[in-house]
Length: 257
Image (cartoon, rainbow, N blue to C red):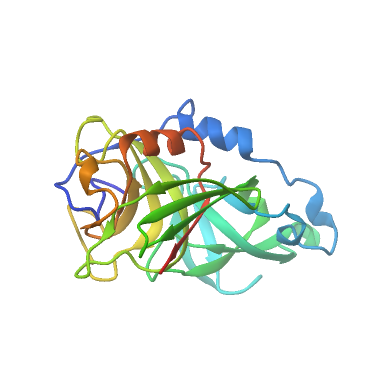
C-alpha cells in the first residue's frame, strides 16, 4: 500500500511490511498446505480443496507474467515483491492443465491486486508457490458486521466501520494482499493493517497512494460500527491484532450489502 493506507479517513502514515517472523507469516505457514503433486491429474486443484478453503498463489519470480488466457498473450507483468516489500500474493479462482515445460504443471486464473476491482489473469504454476487458507471473511455493510469463517463454519464476528455514502466501501469479492505493522500502534490505523485487492471507486489517489483499501485498527474505537471511512474497513485494535495473528495472506474477503 506504499506510503499510506490510501482509502482510509486518516492522514498519511508510513507503515512497514511484516517480516518472515511476523504474526501473519506464521499464520500463513500454519494454515497453508502444499498442493504439490496434485496437479498431475485432470481434476483441478481448486476442485479438490476442502470445503471453505481457498487456493493462494505467491509469486516466486521477480517479474510475474500475466496472460489473457492459458498460454495466451501477456497482458501485464507484476513486480515481486510489491512496492512496500511484501510478497506478491494472488487468490486462485480456477486451474487447467499446462503452464509448464512439456505440458506439465497447470495454468492458474488468479485475481489481481489492481484496478479495476475484480481483475483476473492467467499465470503459470511454475512461477508461484501454492498454499491454501481455510479462512474467509464476510462483511455485511448494512449490519456493520465482519464475519470470520473457517473450514466453512462461522468462527466469530466483529463490529466493523465502513465507508461513507460519499466514499463507500465497494461490494465484491477481494482478498488480503499484505500485512503491515504500523509504527505507532496508538495512531489512526492501530497496530496492524491488511492491504486489500480492492480499490476505492470514488478516489483514484488518497494520502499519497493509489486509492487501495485496507482492513485495520483505529484510535477511535467508538466509531467502529458506523459509516466513517473513505472506504477502508475499521476494527478495534484488539480485533485486528487477533486477525493479524490468524489470517494468511490471500484469504478471501466478501463485501456484501
